[in-house]
Length: 444
View: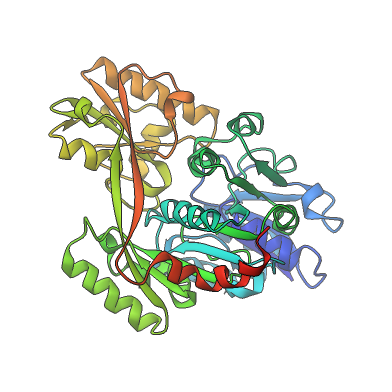
């Protein structure tokens, strides 16, 4: 059956590798690309696609879906990317059906690999709910228990896919050597700074084999609101009361909530009490048996005095404020709390950053740290420089990395970071109890 996989350079490749690569009943004639720039126009290489695909598999823009169905005689379209509204999923299904193809969403467990060590999966209902800070807290607690932890990160293979088949990061030098993008560094660098090893790439069966050799426990550090690629011992799902209701309106975030062993309601320190109560009711209705925890997302500013009363350019994590839909982040909040005035970056945006603002008009007075490639990094640098010439006094960096290591910043800057604080009962130890019990007798 001729098949197209709808993706965004991550879940689509994993589904292909696990379900379709070696199955003669299916011929995957194309991938489509969405959300991430510069994916379309490439090919999934033959070295990864296998013997059945000696020429590799082309990757096209999702906008061409109907044309591809007709051109290739496609009978099946497979949905394989994350953080998309339920209604938008059905629009895609309707487009496929009207063009003559079936449309499927693969069950999460069908693509989960089985590990030989316990696994904690940190997933979410929406991008920007607080997975990264939660993953770091989980890793820290497991290491405090004396366990060797390997972090397996959701894929971000935006470069040479063959070279990125299996990636292992232990130092910042590894990030440079493997040409990690800003988006990759945002996720990997904090783990490396804490002493953890991070694995990522394209072929997660091979990645898992490598990680198992170095770990007593694996932490799956999810991307967007995707489901885990590895079968979890504990599934911990983060939900966001600033977007109460989204936990049942986005794909596959609702799936994560329904699969969760533990649901963490994050950001209760900044959300309205009624929103916290609403999201708790919602998740209990979706998953009555899950353990429900609450946490604060504390904001830490390296030098808060530097922001007071200044003209500030706030730079935020790109995916969170673009397809994640957030209109603020840690840098924005810290600047406003300090009585600073936010400088609107939109008049100064160039190149692909200007295109990003056009695509996401609700972004407002913040600058997304888009850096999926050298071109976007250059555009980010030029946008910051132009804003600095027009009155910016201080730059507030709300991304998880030290952006000054990649871009020369023309003004003084402060870093602003989120830290997870679990509140009351249940505790993080309660959430991790199944893993801590399993590994208690096997600690090195």
